[in-house]
Image (cartoon, rainbow, N blue to C red; front, side, top):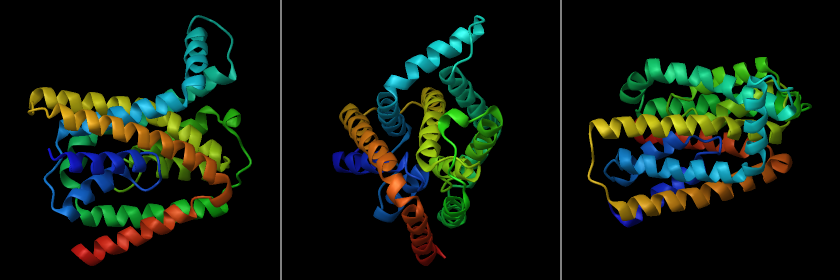
Length: 265
C-alpha cells in the first residue's frame, strides 16, 4: 500500500470517526474519487485500532470508575452515577450488535453505493439540524436513563447503513431527547467504544478467513495517524459544540450529498 494513501486514509478515518459526517461514507468515497484501490481489511483494522486508543485515552478518567462500579453492582454493590452510565452504554450497544449480526453482510455488499451514501448524508444531515434547533438541551449525562440509552442505541443501529454516521445519528437522537450538546456528544463517544471493539473483532474474523499480505509499515502509520487525529478531533469537537452547535456539519453533509449526486446521478 502506498504510504501517502495510508496517511490520507488514516487522517480521513481519524477525523470523521467522531464527527457527525460518516467515516464509513468517506472511506468509501475517498478511494473512489481519487481512483485508488480498496485499502483492504487489514488497514481497516489498523485505523480502527487507532481511533479506539484515542477514545479510550480521552475517557481514561471516566472508564475505570464506570467499569469498577458496574462490576460492583453485579456483586450486590450500590448503584452510582458511574455504574448507571456504564450499564446505559451496554444497553445502547445491544441493538447495533444484534442488527450487525443479522444484517451486516447484506449491508456491506448491497448498500455501499455512492447514491445510497448521498441519500443518507442528506436525509440524516437535515434530521441532525432539526434536532439541534428543536432539542431542549436541558439534560446532562447524569440524567440519562435506560429508556434514553435504548432509544439512542436503536438509532445507532441505523448507522450500519453507509453515510448515516454513527456519531451523527446518536447525537441526533440524544438532542431530540433533550440532552445538552456536549452531553449528547460525550455519550455518543462512550457508545462508540464497544462498537469499535466489535467492528475490529468482526474485521479480524473476516481477515482470518481470507488472510491478506500485511504491509506493516502502512498499518503502523495508519494506526498512529488515525489515533492522533481522532484524539484531537474529539477534544476539538466537544469544545466547539457549545459555541457553534452542529449546523456546520449538517450543511457539509448536504453539500457532499449534492457533489455525489452531481458526479454519479
